[in-house]
Length: 220
Image (cartoon, rainbow, N blue to C red):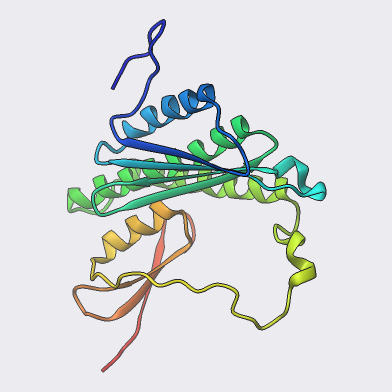
């Protein structure tokens, strides 16, 4: 990693690709992205690849959220993703990096608690609760900025009762703890997986504060 000097630009050791959809990415903005990702990399040294996508989404009714940035970070057996929409790409970058940083810090706390092999001490619980509160506040703020209905621009094309998106994921068996970490890294409220201890399709999901729930299907 190069240090930030008079003529040097801070950049991560991991590979970085920056692409633009309907927009050109100037060199000075690429330097800004690299500097931000170099700091993110310190939270998880196992990260090996960053993909940053910029997209201009023209919509007269949502001009304040026309510039979209999505950051996908890939590490050893895990993936983290954050997205933000603001009135400028610089603001969107700050917001997306903030979300990614909170997710990685949260997973780091969970892993430290898991490695201890004991019930989480009060101090660790307070840290996890604080991270959860910060994540919820960030999501709430983003929803308020986007308006009451984040999909208002799709109303004209809406037809009730339709499946509008399908996804398939590899069903690699994993532990419940690993599933919780994956859920945090992608910023979702639930995660579907195969429990390697029971071989059952299972779902982990968020509950209150820093608690989680687990649902498993009985296939016998």
